[in-house]
Length: 491
Image (spheres, rainbow, N blue to C red):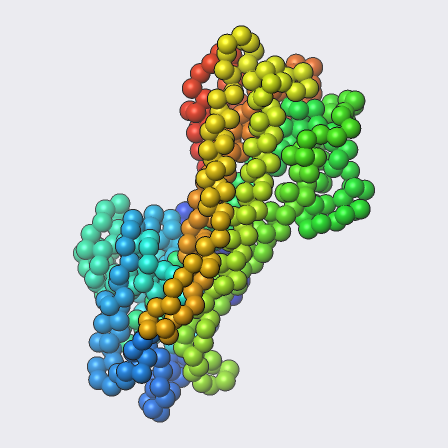
């Protein structure tokens, strides 16, 4: 795989996914080191002039008014240790790599003033696959510094790290990888901590996963059109032009392309189908709009200097900022959760239509046996449970915070939690899509005279590679799980 080049601009969510999940190597443009060197020199000059610089010669948070006048480098290690208070299960390997990649991408912009040597040490952790053990709980969205403290700990040879599948004390993991602990200079510890790299790294992976799964949701909806004998005229371009809501026109075009060649176009359709079919284009369009906004928000963060304080090279000064605060990112992922809930509810409604008492000539419960056969109807409970999970997680969390640090930090965004629950929503949504695909494929099998479109026929074959036609009652939960795994494998 080609290396990913960090040059302080243009990093995409797909780049973070490649680094996180395919172990793509990261290379750094020489211009980055020029910016790092100049920013470091400017920071040192500002400190030498007597300027008060947060986290360099002052304490943090409630200790803001406390001056740090002796052993400034040791203070950086002290602040790392003092903020290593995260708890909970550790982040998985791919997310940990996404966190490291996100922080490196941000640092490449050159606004942190971090030492080039510490930047290189962080780069070496990623490329040598030494993964700090990062707890999952501790961020309230005013930066992820409590969680990122574990990254800084590993860099200085403290805490724990995973290497080659085993967890070791960080010093041992570094030695096994041929690396040495970092020596933190003034502000280096804060530069590693004071950012939203955990939130941003996971947000990149969520956006990639949601983008991939959306393709399968479209295919599931198209296959349900085929199975339920839906009226494809609802997707006509003239209808979309009459009310061109965000994404609606494009989504209708995509669904029409999926259905091209279907015998639906020659049938005598119902005047009005259920809303989960009839309104699928605007429902999908609303989600795609939300996903595009979330992707933009993530990529802004990946290519931004979100540090406090910020080294402003073009103005030759060091300024305190609020750039670590990420309300736009938090709101974007709250919107993602609600938009997925809308779309998953429509998918579930189509599933209920397919598996109920019979519609458009389909046998009850999609069973060819009839009689007391349960067919697909018990799976309605599973779909309902999945929808309940999605709806619960879609409730907003961005307003849930308390003032901390003696009132200095009296606002928070809960970005980390907003992104994490969006990831859980995507996981539940994947199972809903799998259920719709299975039911639609079964319905197609029970409509021998129907001809699917070329691309919806491909979707049908994809489903049947994972699950055979239901001829008699069996444990369909296994089929759902196997198909959901296939949907995950495509991301």
